[in-house]
Image 1: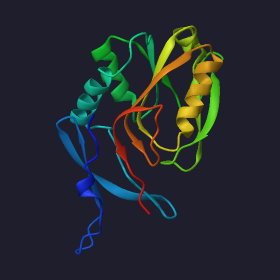
Image 2: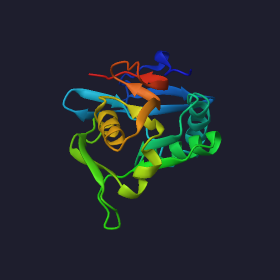
Image 3: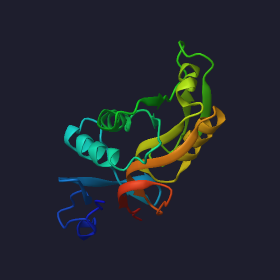
Length: 193
């Protein structure tokens, strides 16, 4: 497993530049900006969107960690979508996307509300009823970019179990804050005060 580079912990530089936290995903290194997401709570912001090199490295590494017996991947939109695609391509497993809004074309959607650490506001997670048959009776691996407070993970698990799926694994590029033994991750990001 690749871990965040602890030697590059953030600190405000003397010239007032933004604090950074250096991480490594496979052979790819990135400097993450440390940003405040709530009063007194700062995170190293890991955003894979548009970063093909990181997405490919993380997806290939995580595909190798998917346990045998998993039938389908489930991912929340948006930031982990590219990651799920790479894992799907590498593993041969199909994936289902849990959306963040109800769309007019959805058939009997299943929805749960969640508050994520990065948004700080309630948001919806929605499974299109059309995709229920892809999950019901199957072993599922949840795919996410970062698992922090566990709110999104708990809501995804509720939706999967409600429609008759079994969560067999949770994979993420990073866990954040408290260590989460139920998550197989490539590294861990601390919270900063």
